[in-house]
Length: 96
View 1 (cartoon, rainbow, N blue to C red):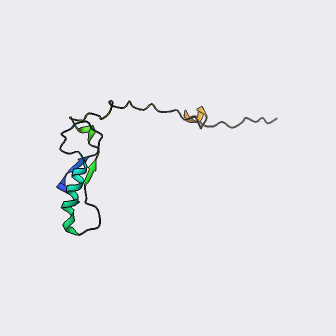
View 2 (tube, rainbow, N blue to C red):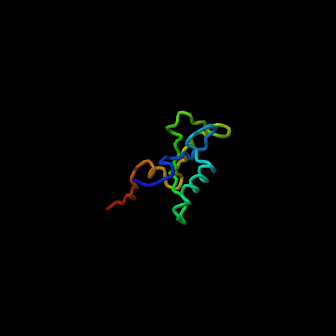
View 3 (cartoon, helix red, strand yellow):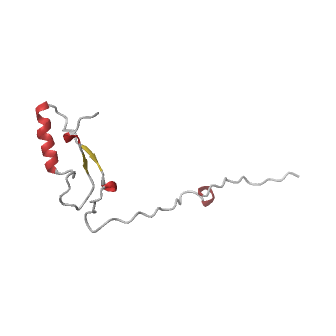
């Protein structure tokens, strides 16, 4: 089991919820640094971070709203037959 600040995972999502208790903020960084200082370690304080927006019921995207899902671009660097799964065909030869 790894040691981390408050034994909690803080959220790094760009969220518009103002009173989120698990948001990773500069205040959390400062508090973790004060907590970690007595160890006399030169490494930064261990803080567990993750994007928890997918499972958070209070998540609201920050900014103008959520971004649309990107449309996949077709692969244009290979011939269509190869991308469709067809095998390349060898030229036919005749024997007389």
